[in-house]
Amino acid sequence: MKLKRIAFVAITLCAYQFYAQHKGNYNQIEQTISRQNIAMKGNAQIYNPITAPNPFQNLSPSEHITIDVRAMHNVEATNYTAVFNLSQIGVTAEEANTLINERINGVKQNLSALGIKEESIAADVISFVPVYDLEIEKKIFNTKYVEVPKGFELQQNLHIAFTKTNQFESILSACASNSIYNLVKVDYFIPNIAEIYKGLQTELLDLIQDKKEYYKLLGFDVNEYKATVADDKFCYFPKDFYQSYQAYNSVSFEAIKKRKGVTQAKKQTSYYYQPLTFDSFDIVKNPSILEPVIQIGMQIKLNYSPLPKEKPAELPKPETKHKYYIISPNGTIDVKELITT
Image (cartoon, rainbow, N blue to C red):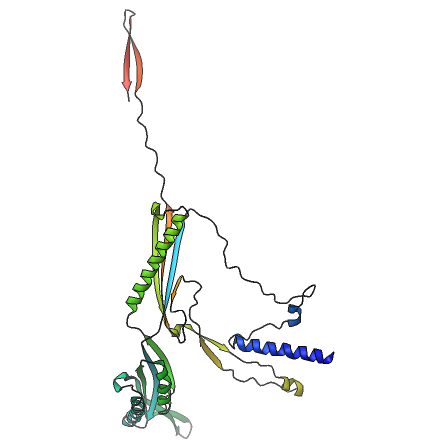
């Protein structure tokens, strides 16, 4: 009986371990639930039951027709620019400038062997300021601290353009070997964004035409409706979709056993790329992506309202004939007719 119980616990722990590895580290907040009660039926209590989501909304029929179509294109960049920040101090301005140029020239030499030409590397001067230190002036009755210049600090940004993502690792290595560690950002570029918008627009117009035919088969001809329109577009770069998380477990069983305090360690913050999902789009071009991409999208929304019904033409009013009587002084009566419209 004990062997069966041990085997069951071992299988349960193994299954839990494989599940955690498959899920990843970015969501570590998880409730502790009973695997046994989930598997059992009858009167056993089920903790955290999983309910299937309803993919359909509660529809409310209306005499108005709305056509809302959205398209997105995941575009791989053709050019990249990595920006690194570096600073250099020196006793004189000439020394600071010479030392920083030596580091930049070292990067250029290392990258030239990879096919990245010197024309693809540019330096942008950010600041060039003197550096001060404190000197103590001691007098009989007081002590003063005076700032005096001790050298100069030169700070620059190094822009490196490249065309293949596999070159970036070599760029990092070349910069690190020349004491350049501060990566500011990586920019993505595409040359034909107008053509991409034009392609999305064409596909959306075809989809709108299909929807019009669909509603016509249902008995609603949108040509007999009053139409209003709105459209929009977007362009997002990978830097807009990086999210952070911390993967750790702070429980220390050794500290509990030895009854010692726990010293909290600094937790590493990690980042992952989370692009726009496809659930709200009708058309997605290049849906399967391996590396961060530029996401370009467009939306067209049409509202159709029934035209007001025409009022029936009013019939002309019939002529109304009135009679009046003229009585003379001698008592005779004369009947006349008065026609009015």
